Image 1 (cartoon, helix red, strand yellow):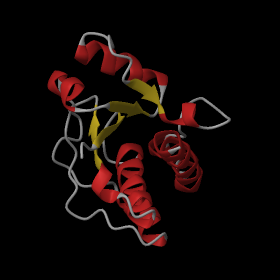
Image 2 (image 1 turned 60 degrees about the vertical axis):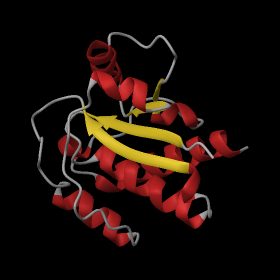
Image 3 (image 1 turned 90 degrees about the vertical axis):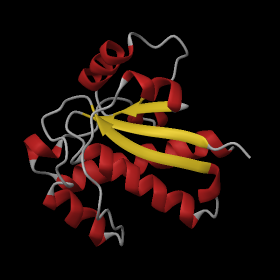
Length: 152
């Protein structure tokens, strides 16, 4: 069986994209279909390369029983475009950066996470707002909608 390969992307890969990566991993496990997916996350910048998930993001995931230990930030590469079925970003700036890194989106693989909800737009960036609960709600809604679109 071929797996659906999903890469979640944000600017630094220490808050929003790891929250989406680990929420989605948890979701597919709870739904009993983890073997059908390969899920990871990356950044569009090098600013945080090698750094662990930001502590408040780790704490927010831990509140929901999700462990992200061992995750370190990495920058996405042009090769990720061929390696993944979907490249899911958190905001319009991420999307522009992804298109620049990959040289466009000829196969239509690049999407915004909240496009899978009834309120498209940007996932709240807790790096600037400090509101990890709002980000969690966005990630939860987006990942749930994405999962539904892939399994219905």
